[in-house]
Image (cartoon, rainbow, N blue to C red; front, side, top):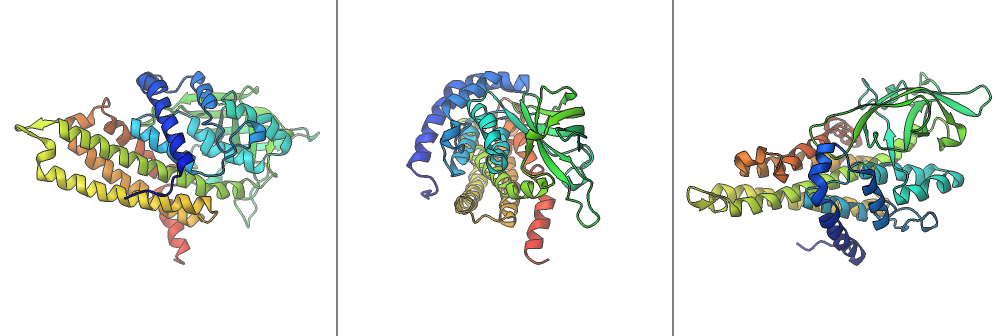
Length: 385
């Protein structure tokens, strides 16, 4: 079926991006996987291409596009090629929206231009050891100094995507204790310079998948953060985080669809070329039926994602809608990719085959951005249950 969610500008961007991936990513991706990160110079190349500044206003060096569909194109093209842009996804899809929405004019002029060029990469630090999805339970603190010039940051964060290479990290911390009526009160966001004394990157975490995306543990010991680096209003962070969750979950859903569509293409290519018992694997009825099921699943995933993209750009995607979309796409993508891996036989278990990497990469989509269990709770609550 013909897709209508993308226009000429999106498709022109897709063509440019596809050429860039073929020339600048695919030949080096295995080395990046082995290193556990992409080289910093690659982020500059993304900046030159315009990928990092798509949604940043022109006065700060960006393209000024408002549509999330360009981010969807990036997800689809990376999945199609079986590659990733490392921590760039967290930089553009998670961090920049906070800066665009809540930074002061002075902060935007400091932070946005280098964010567009790749000179300054960002990460966001929410999760703490032992808290998981319970953001209100965070223990990292930021106490205002007696003279009111800076905060003193103490605590630890974990599972921070892009945390090894980031120049600034949006750290969620308690600037006030929770109130008895509201555990979520008193949380603020500080845009912390990673060169600050007392800021430390701990272990680089070894993950099941997403091998080119550096993920770290961070610690803060009496880190001095100027009050001018407070993002938005003090104590309002939880509402800021909630506001951006629809976008974050949409991005995960788009990625899940893109990975399932890519897995289907990889499986089709494999079964057509692989021969067993003197026949192509594609000739067996079981293969045909499995792939037919996968095709119908991918079509459904695409329809749900495209509808959500339209709703988001129209300002109509609610947090409950996004939770439903994320739940459906991530759960069904796991089924599709598993079936496509099975059709590869033993080769599907080898990391040299892209379907194996997709299998590992997609597993986290049911965990980060809110687990499937949390998504079910949100959807059930929206139904009055």
